[in-house]
Every structure is written in C-alpha cells, then in structure tokens.
Length: 406
Ligand code: FAD
Image 1 (cartoon, rainbow, N blue to C red):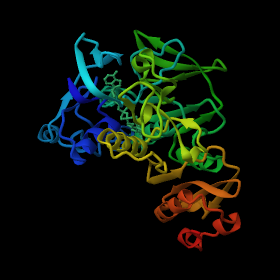
Image 2 (image 1 turned 60 degrees about the vertical axis):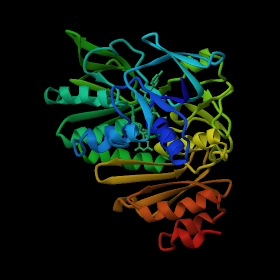
Image 3 (image 1 turned 60 degrees about the horizontal axis):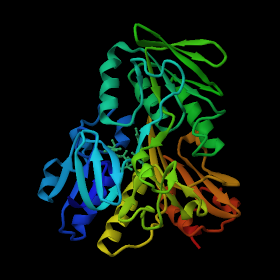
C-alpha cells in the first residue's frame, strides 16, 4: 500500500510526485507505469529525439537516481487494468494488487489507430512513446517513401524531421487544411506552404481507404478516390484515445476522458486525474468541458492535485500554452483559439516571423506566434486579462503588445 499511488509516469505523473516531495509530503509515494522507461519528455519524440539531436538520456525528466533519492517508488512495465475504489486497490495485468490511500490517474492516452484494413501491418507507426520512435527509426534506413496520415502537430513535426533526412514525404489530411482543429486558416496556409517549400507533398481533403501490404509489411496507401500511393512507412498522427477505461469501469464520470473538478478530483473518493486524460471545465474555453493535451496542462494540473492532497489546494485556472517546432520555425501558442470570431495578423508571414491574434466578441482569447517570442511573452498578459483591444491597433506590429495591456 502507498499513501499516494500515481498511475502513469509521464509529464503529469512525474510532476505530481515531484510536487508532493517539494511541498514537504513525507508519506509513501509511488508511480506505476506500463512503459519500460523512467519518466521522459514526450515533445522531443517528434522533434529532437526523432532527428537524433538529443539522446534518450537528454530527454529524461530527471536523472534515474532522482526518484530513489526522493523516496519515490517507480514501478516499470506494469499496466493497471482494474481499480476498486471500495477496497482502495488497483490490479495490474500480471494480477498484482496494490493498495492506495490516494490514487492519482495520470495515464495520458494511446495514439489513435486507423480503423481501416491494413492498420496493423509492419511499417505502420504511431508516435506516442520512446518505443514507438525506436521501432520507427530502426526501419528508417530502408524506408524511402513515407506517408504521414494526419496534418496535426505531430504529423507535421514528423514530416519536417523526415524530410530533413531526405525522405520522400507525403502528408494526407482529411480536412481542407492542416492544423484545422487548433489554429485559424492563415496559420494552416502558412504551414502548408512551408512544408511544400521543403519538398513535402501536402494533400488536403484526402481520405484513407485502406493500407495495402505485401508479406505483412505496408507497401502503400489506397485513398478514398481509389488512387494508390506507394509507401515504405506510414506514420499515423490522428490524435489520442484517453487511457481511462479502468476508471470509467470503476464508476468514474467521464467518457472521452475522466471528469474532474477544478481541483482535479474525479467523482470517485480519493481519486484524482491529471494531464491529457482529465476532462475539466476550462476558463479559457468559456468553461467548456475539455481535455488539454500539453505539457503545460499536465504540469499545472499535477501541481494542483499535489497541493489538494496536501491540503493547500487552489483551483486550476492556468492559461494554456503550447509550442511546436518544424524546420527552423518555432510556433508558440497561448490561450485557446477555438470559437474565435476575428483573427488579426501582426507582421508579414512572408518574413517567417509574425503573430496571429484571435479575438472573440472583441476580447483577445489566443495568439499563435511564429518566430515571434516577444509577442508570445507579451500576448500572454492580453489573454489572461481577456483584454478588449481594437483589432486595427493589434494589426500594427510597430506597437508592442505590452503597450496595449489595459
Ligand atoms: P503521458 O505523458 O502520455 O503519460 C502517461 C503515461 O501513463 C504513459 O507512460 C502511459 O504509458 C502510462 N499509462 C497509461 N495507461 C496506463 C495504465 N493503465 N497503467 C500503467 N501506465 C499507464 N505538448 C506540448 O506542450 N508541446 C509539444 O511540443 C508537444 N509535442 C508532442 C509531441 C509528441 C510526439 C507527443 C506524443 C506529445 C506532444 N505533446 C506536446 C503533448 C504532451 O507530450 C502531453 O500533453 C503530455 O505528455 C501529457 O502528459 P500526461 O502525463 O498526461 O500523459
């Protein structure tokens, strides 16, 4: 039995354990994860780890000795399949039962798989774990034609990384623009043009019918219009399925995520949920119930849960932020642009350094900043204040955003 048992040792799980110890929590704390590795950063998997600019050791959240020194148990290679909130135990796939005083569910999600024929052929990869990327990299020397399914951040980052390696890369996006779920049209068009300028074949409004194989290996992608694209490797970046089944089966409210209140409590006693799997009412989405898939959210929710467990809790109200790197472009996003009614461009996208400010009913709700760190830093204050600013003023890159803070 552990006083605090954390299921999942990703960004949220690791941070929760760290925050408990930093806050002076002296009782027993353990993390249990199905992965074989100590906690590591996930964003580099489609960036510096994939391009081999960073070794695995450099993406560890802490050096392995850290956990022992802080008396934080790390149970690797163990998947929790059942939660019994009455007995306060979890059961692993191997049949072990572990007791808890408080349970923190920090399981993130699994890369969503294609549901069509051929999705389990060798050569078809998701990018969610270190093991996924290591498997993919082992095949790279013999894979020349790579098809990326999904024009979201992970698909586009993978396309940028692999085109740098000289691969022949095609991105297939079912909607009429890339990044459609997370950004406005102007940013989508900008990134489509960048990828094309780097030789990536970006195809929009294209559905995948099935994956074709020979001797168990993928050899091509059949598109909805019946045409065939040859492929030595297929990378699938179509989002995640939150890993919440054992908690939902135990009676927790939720579905596409596990529902939590503003202190990350689930509807089950002494069970919290944090990070990608936590469905919460977000102030920056007008209170809508959403999951936020970012390191920021994982870290902030983990801190909130740790403090609540220690009795010093405060509600979760952090402003969302996110980044993405593709080629030499650093995109930084603050706020959530969903539901915006006005988008203002600051600066000229042709210079590859500009920002887009999103407004809703006259108030600033989010910014996408490309190679424009100043706007990102200063714009955060506008988002936090939901500042009401004249779009014409925002459009003038000569006026710093900090001068517009009300
Ligand atoms: P995770 O980090 O996914 O950790 C959950 C852990 O729980 C995993 O190890 C999982 O295997 C384990 N687990 C799940 N179920 C069980 C179970 N039943 N039993 C035991 N263990 C279990 N965010 C950004 O802000 N910026 C970026 O640039 C960015 N880039 C990304 C690039 C990639 C390739 C990926 C995959 C994600 C990226 N993200 C980025 C998102 C970010 O990594 C996630 O938001 C973050 O990892 C969420 O943390 P988490 O702890 O909630 O989940």
